[in-house]
Length: 542
Image (cartoon, rainbow, N blue to C red; front, side):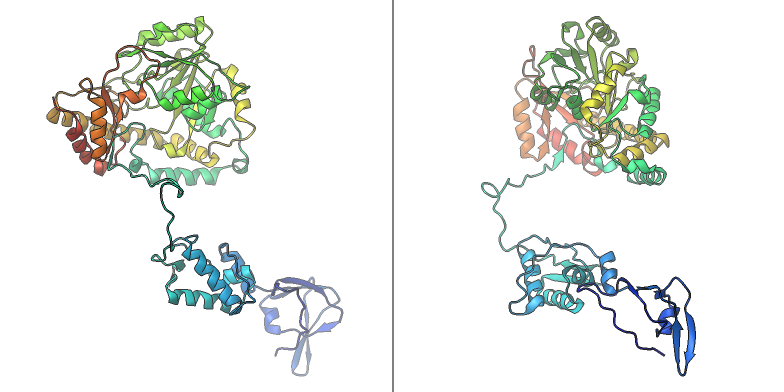
């Protein structure tokens, strides 16, 4: 049934691809079974002509496309990439030996780590221009030697027991020595990462991707996705009392990024110093300002927040009015009004760091200072405490006159925050999942705070706890001269803590009380009680 077909000549390395060649005769003989399977196509249907015991397909002169699906094309579609530098194949053993040597050397030196999945032998053969049997034999020999493992459904992988012959020394000449993670971490600044709402976030991510317009996968608007800005404008107005619309909001990657955009671009600064800051705050923020050449002046802090009456001719002031970090406590209502009046009088600005405004326990919600005067206050928020710092999503609600200046500094394209994450967060907020997550975490963190206060009252009643009406941390007041020894004792127990002195401005004046800043949101749920036990055992006696 199969007639002879003249061979089709192809360049070396191309096998059974899509080939076009002219047909000059009026009748050519084909395999009828191949024609029925659709392996040959033409511009006109073939005519079957019987000639004795043979069947021939009669075609007019035209171009015939012979389309086949070879193992090379199949492997190229389904395989994965692997960088291999082959030894000279002209040596002993040929190409098979060269491949074995190269793979063995990659495993021995550690370039291919244990557990690394190798591409299927068909795919690697296609990439290297080798016969399939050559690569299959090389894999089989390395499996027999113990360098590789093969399991049904799992593919071929580097054996777990295959280790480099010589590890690089740690320390001098071999890179940094490995760091040891603490057994218990009670430092402030992080939520319970184990409580990230994975299922709900995945649902919003899928919904966002399915509904995303095509331009969402382009370079990106530096102001941020309009979907997220509109969702934030509604949420911030409803929950934080912020007066905003989508046009005022610029998406950033967090508060540090906001500081860089406002102060940190030499020659194109949106704002300039001097800048007033709270005498207790994050050293990282002070470092960013110092690097940008911005001089900061500390404001004294008491139980009512920053003493804004000491403000003078500064161009701006940086505050944490909802929950002063790290001392705790909100900015007193009279001081909130006073700082806005100062900004109006001196043509200055207020930078409001609303880092954990959603978490309050024993008091009514306090609205954002921005609501008092949107043209004098820059409101900055993030999801670092409410969701996760790994998302790297924050926002600035700017005075109208500063929007274009900030966008000019940020650049023509979004380079800082993932656009699909922005779409997912927009859906997360609009669907109500964000509200439900915040309320659930608020209850969980309140229970943790109560556990902390109860444990300290029972075991170390001489240690006072302050700043616990809101937020994710508490301040433990220590006897004078005991802060540094307590931190050293905690380190020996594998307990990570932060002292008040770590947050004090170098130029601050006045009393410097001893204390600890305890982040009760940081440990995972299962490890919290053990962390509290270690804390109580570390605190100095009465």
